[in-house]
Image 1 (cartoon, one colour):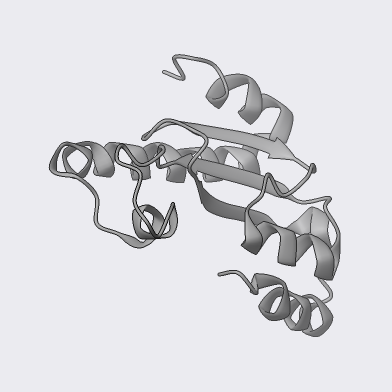
Image 2: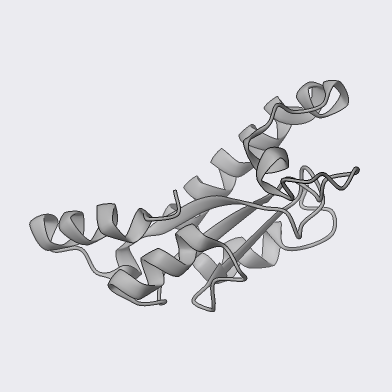
Length: 127
């Protein structure tokens, strides 16, 4: 994940994609578990995979950030074990709904455009 740009760049070259043609879905510890945020462009927010993609193809792509929350207990290995670890029992129970909402948001981006989708899904209650 940290070197995602090295995988994306050859695809862009081969298929003739531009950053505007790409939607990147990724985890975000700065968002509460189960939430999502959509935006176009911007920085990496400290996410190494996004930093790598920006370094390879630029920053002008759509991002769908899925909240995984911060670790409740600070561990020696920091956030890494939280990001790569298993979901808590209570999180597993809501995970299907989060994934369905994310899939609906992706379809909306494609069918309705980024602006309308952001209006709908970046609200507190996107129902």
